[in-house]
Image 1 (cartoon, rainbow, N blue to C red):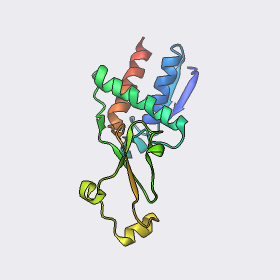
Image 2: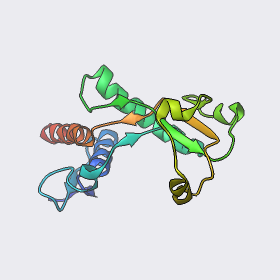
Image 3: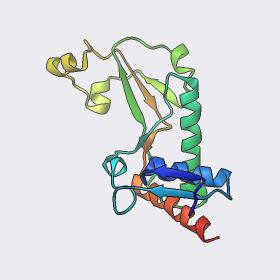
Image 4: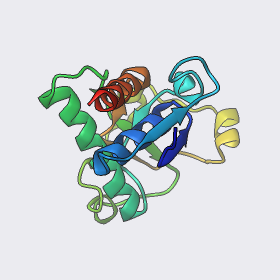
Length: 167
């Protein structure tokens, strides 16, 4: 059989790529191959699957926000459990950041409270040396961030690809 597209890897990246390629090109013949016996057994199985939209490049922000909106739609509007939980993402800086900096990130806020009492953050001198920071001057919390279950998301993509193959 001939294929228009061959995707190597049946993890989250391969399956989501095949899904979006097929969605954009319904007539395309796509083959997904993987060295494992089933999907999501490589890096996807080892992934903590955190998501965030706090990036220095605007292009990365846009891509992340589109992905988060897609996942949120799957879970909230379509009722597909992908284990999506918003729990935030905390960034620690060894230099001051101001409101002007944070204004570029609509889902983020500067933490002005004492970090040690909020997050139990007490970084000893040895850890600071390893992290290459003298002290924490600023913390920024990205609220449009959290975790997702990568095997559940991969399973969604796999099921949709199988459904399209049967059409």
